[in-house]
Length: 87
Image (tube, rainbow, N blue to C red):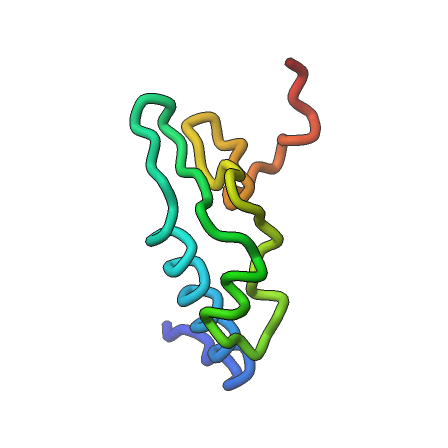
């Protein structure tokens, strides 16, 4: 059983998404005490630096935003139950 081949459009979009996320995470601050990764770049800086064709692959982030954390509530983490959590 083989994998389904992606169209050239989807393949290019996925490659750019990986490149953008790698760029963001390489320039992020890792707070080991709070188990968080904090963004040090904004969406505009990523757009200027990466020269992307697909604007949808660049997440809408700002400086100082928590990208990942131990509770799964970071802006780059996918949480199905995020809206149902009561604090």
